[in-house]
View (cartoon, one colour):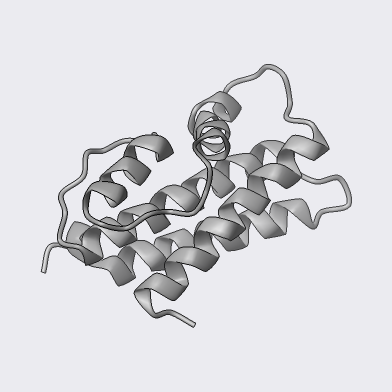
Amino acid sequence: MNKNADPLAWATLAEEDYLLARLALSQEKPLQYGVCFHAQQCAEKYLKAILALQGKAFPKTHDLLALSDLCQQSGVIVPISADRLDRLSAYAVQVRYPGEEPTLEETQDAIEIAQATRRFVREFVGLY
C-alpha cells in the first residue's frame, strides 16, 4: 500500500504533531510559533487521514479549507467552521518566518482547533 494512502500512517504523523504542540504549550514560556505550526500540521494530517481512508487522492497542500472541501466531496462533513480552519491554515507558513508572534490567545485557539479536528477524525477513523 502506498504510504500516502494509509490513514493510520497519516494519523501517526498527526499525533506526533499534536504531542509536539502540547509540549510547546506546556513550557514555562509557551513556544507559541511551535504550538501554532504543529497544531496546523496536526489538523492537516488528520484531514489527510480521512481522505486516505475514503480512498481519495489529495494534493500536497497546507490549505485546511481545501482539504475539508475534499472531505465533504467524499461525503464526510468536518464539523469545524471554515473560519477556524482558515485561521489555522495560515500557521503552516506564517510562523516559519520572523514577524508578529502569535498571541497567547491565538496560540490557545490554534491548539483548540487542532484538538477538535483530532477528536473528530480519531472517532471517524476508529482510533480511541
